[in-house]
Amino acid sequence: MKNTILTVFVGFIAFIILQSFDTNSLKKVDGTEPGYTGSPGDSLKNCTVCHGGNAVNIGGWITSDIPESGYVPGTKYRITATNTSQSHNRFGFSVSPQNITGTMLGTLVVTDTTRTKLNGGGKYITYRPAGVPNDDKAIWEFDWIAPSDTVNEVVFYGAFNSNQDGHKGGDLTRLSNLKVFKQGFTGLADFNKGLNLSVYPNPCSDYLEVSMQIMAANDAKISLYRLNGQLVTTLFNGPANAGSFQSRFDVSQVEAGLYLVQTETGNKQAWQKVLLVR
Image (cartoon, rainbow, N blue to C red):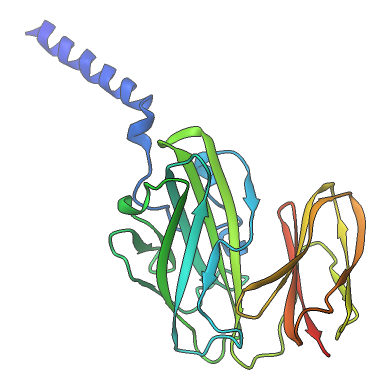
């Protein structure tokens, strides 16, 4: 009897040990935990907390059908999140519409209950098991109801992870965001996270001069966006040395209107409104 009990006990311990090394049993296939979008309100936490590696900022992975004129309070819009990674077949994401302090703005609405779900009290939308397996790309769609008239700007923060067959080691984590504004709102708040961004002249017509302070050599990206978050053009995308960065860009072919100049380098971002006149 004692031998039988000992055998069962040893077998149980062996099972636990083997499970601890079974990477397949540790796959997270039913969404991320709340609070991992890479937003300032989430303390910049993202998929790398669990998956390791480094997160890279990328534009255009969160898009919407919000018109160029901006969103109308109380109106429902379609939001699309896209994760692209060649040779990967498992994908995940988490997106949340927030302000700079992390307060949720508007209402997220699940439109595909088989592939997406809400968590964190409805503050975040993330994947479900059916939304994980794809080849090279995964696309998720959901709706968002714009907040009340007192809210003028919203940022959709998103963290995306992809890998091959659920095995860690080849994971890729990307961060993307979409900044949108209320229709008719022109008092856009600039956001400057340690880059000392300056855009001159403002208003401008033919050219735009962008300067910023870069703390350490890194890749830098300067983009021009419409108020609905649509990318108009990438002004610069390449390596930049530490110190003062300054460059002039031709914007003579861009139609008149109010735009955002967004700069990214390392884990720092900044944006500033600019008015193009003709």
